Length: 229
Image (cartoon, rainbow, N blue to C red; front, top):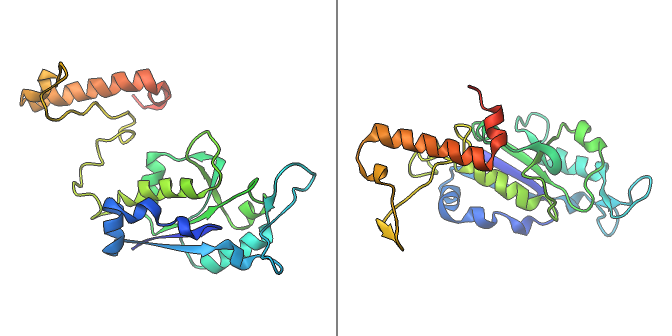
């Protein structure tokens, strides 16, 4: 079973939207599992402090390495083979290939930071892989963790109704997905492209490939640049 363990100061944020729709149904059926661990349980002193002022000065607070180490060790003791992820805007961009690799593994231990981030020493000390979902700043790692888990869970066997439906989506072939259409045939004077109604599967596949290439060139030329010939 694919299992996600979330280390967070806000466990009530989970499963959130992952408790609904296909992911929620799969969760109820035991296809995957999520557990949350409150970092503050390992906090220090009467107030269970988890952070302190930045060394060298500066604004905000930094999550303590000793507190996080205790939380990680309790949630993923020695022998737990799951990758340990830290949701961070400075991390490696999350790609569909990385999502597939994670979905094919045993799950993940995900640390959701808050404040100004975490003491740098915890990253190396506990072998954390920093992961980013985009070039922007969130209030904490929880929303990013939800996005990562959603991307993984939908690829698990038995989650999506159509096993092939995930193979022709954006990024799966290094391109953005081609345009999709459905009824009505005419919507406010805009008609479904005739080729999609032709029944000629070869022509349809060719049209979809060309449209995907055109969209990708226009919107994500970086994908074209790194796509192998």
